[in-house]
Length: 222
Image (tube, rainbow, N blue to C red):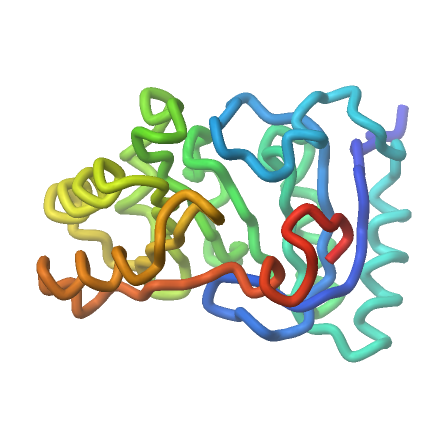
């Protein structure tokens, strides 16, 4: 029987965050997540049976090829948690064959080791800080697997989160890019900048979610 994937939505927009922020990307959002972060902004897609289409690898390839013909060179797999999709490695391989730069937005609780190969996707991995109420699910062993092309994203919603982020960076000394990102509406970016200055975080970047300033923060498909 052909394997099917639970695709909640697909659309072309700009990358709102990460190393390719501002560049066009095809977004493939899959349903299902193993976490329930307190500030999650895509809760509607977290249940495996959330509204979706069951699509084949060929269906996904057609969507991607159409985006490529329109000049798009990035594809972001997101969710939910895309790495929970059985057979997602086949999707990644097919997208790379089309010529797309594949980025996986992953929640930090799923091992990246099976995807660490010579030809692999780019990872933007969240680390859930205390305000998410999900830090206990984090796999810190993923952090050494992240290289310069990857991003460790620390989403902060409080001063406690900032302090924990600093502690984590001191402990793990990641080799990848590190971004601090505010939970929209919970912490002032200016407070985060002052913290970066205080702690001398010269190799860390503050990043705001562009799409939440261009469109309504609750808007889907952007």
